[in-house]
Image (cartoon, rainbow, N blue to C red; front, side, top):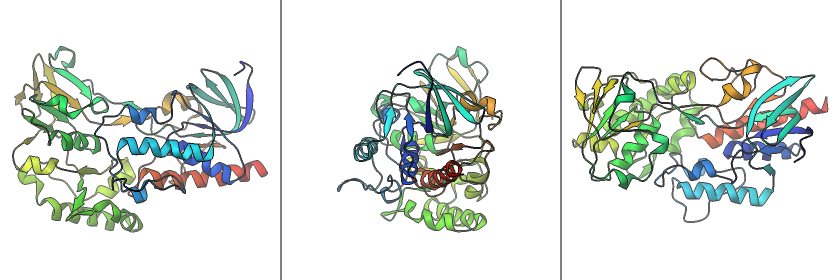
Length: 381
């Protein structure tokens, strides 16, 4: 690529699920976008995830537009199946993707965007940011963390579950990533395993009586939020009983509300709760500090785990990309108009940044269609 700036009508940042969906919807509007991808290969971020990873969303609600998974794919596709799905979609559509093109910043002047990348400057009439919500793992700066003699890693670096055999493990956080780790640890002969929780958690079973619970998500999403809260809470209670009897903090049935307001995803159980009930995993209080070989909890007790897995979530990379445009707050969360990725900056859209009760795929398609139609109208004006 020449170092001289080039101009494109639409630039999409990210070639993951959301980025490819956005490229597809732009083409449906007669616009060929340029897709910028910082990685060398399609699906590289998925390939770095742990080998046991599967989607928590059913395959029928987790496919790219117009493409089904091959026969024999499990109800909850594995990491490898998702990567193959991405590649098959690109093979079919042949979008223009420029790999090894990391974007450092986006600014706007004279009615167009300046996209600064490692391969030069690109000027665009419209930009769709599709870099995902889970770009930067979060590790709290607990007191004494630097003195801890055990190993501390983020859930993003969980790796092969078999590596934890015989080790004592403290998992901090009971959200989606925390339960994903625990689901896999529950199948391994580890040493003691603890789950540290500050607050209550909302959790649904992956299956009930052989039925994939996620297939009900379109029904839940169609309900008013307060009714979805009750249905999710009822399902959790029927599936697991009273979890406070097993050390979980008491909470309200407000999972859908927290998802909409605070973007707190609902955890999915696939063996962890059963392991808690039979004493394989102990639920303990939140972490307050570290010191030498020990971790101190909120009730003053201490543990001495070999490994601490931090599963308190991620933040987006939006602050560094869009900080000059005033569309993100101090925590990196975007300011959006409505729930379909529109920002206050004309021509700037965010796709795949909002969670939903259905699936990342479904939400990204809704956002991408809205963005594509709006951009097409803007360019025809």
